[in-house]
Length: 131
Image (cartoon, rainbow, N blue to C red):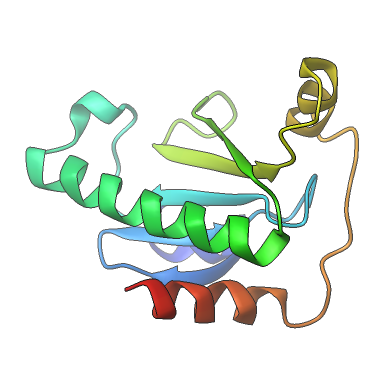
């Protein structure tokens, strides 16, 4: 999932240098995104201290921009690495009113929301406003 294959994993919204924010193609929720490290590592513990600190800053900004763009109030973060053994964190902006079963249907991509035209730009603009 690194290098030239990254764009195949979804639409790149923002390039933060070591980290990239992509919109996930399944659109389980319209703001389903992934934060992906550029170099190949499988686990968070493989990161340098600097990369881990940068992740925290980037994740915070990306999450806020996704919550703002979707009008939701909670973000579910998920790291699996089963299908693609490369560190990437899924961000699912959702309503806090959802049940565990609702969230599991989202994570399992059993549902899908349409992304309005210009959604990626709205997230990108939101990130620029926050940084």
